[in-house]
Image (cartoon, one colour):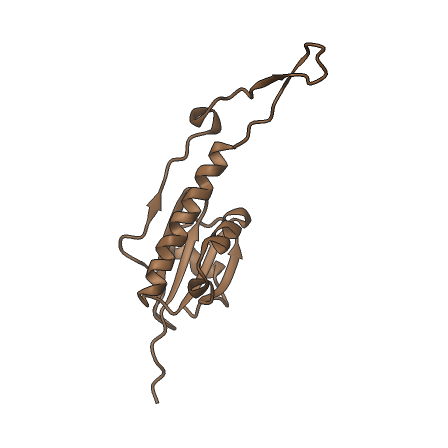
Length: 152
């Protein structure tokens, strides 16, 4: 009896780069999913907003001023936005039935943002997670890191 073909997608991402690879089962390796690679330049916080925090007068009325913390780290905000875009792409593909299992590979902070941004249907398909930045590794180097998560 033949077992049904199971498609596993592997997302390799960080805060600014992402690529999705597919695996159709044992001995099929990893193949990039066409049209899913993303590479976004995220400027530094100083390029995105003011590099100096605002100043305020003391509430005691003595005329002293003190610096205020910036409300948003714009660089981190852009990384969060990128993670939400990738999660949306995965949610759409999951709803279309493009994959059966999903493996997430990203640094811990990005992994947390992705996990929180995925809808329940997609989150249920997550079969493995690896808190590592492998975005700069060649495709041929990835199987060694994914041992036990994907049947390559």
